[in-house]
Length: 131
Image 1 (cartoon, one colour):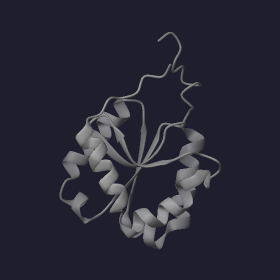
Image 2 (cartoon, rainbow, N blue to C red):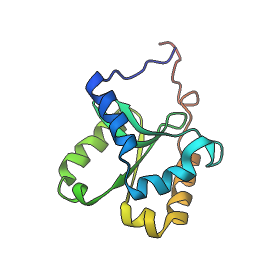
Image 3 (tube, rainbow, N blue to C red):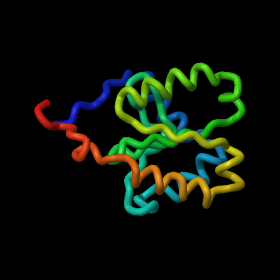
């Protein structure tokens, strides 16, 4: 059985709130990621992972897609620590800006497709073997 990263009830509540209050860029990208619309891969939005809530996550490929807005410009150091922690946990983290999603969506979707092809599945990486 796969071990799930534990999170708190407060983070779960905040994730639900973020799903209701998505940005325009998040809504645009979600239309292409939801319901396995992007090459059959399952994505979750505003997905809790431990102490973090990530914008979009494909658990099968351990790929996280983050959409950075104006607030992220003021917290670059914090985002770097967060990215490092997620990568240490075995995820690949992609970052795009709201502006990129709003004005270059086909390019962003192609980048996500390439990342999905590069990211190994957990089974291929040996997850679940022996523990």
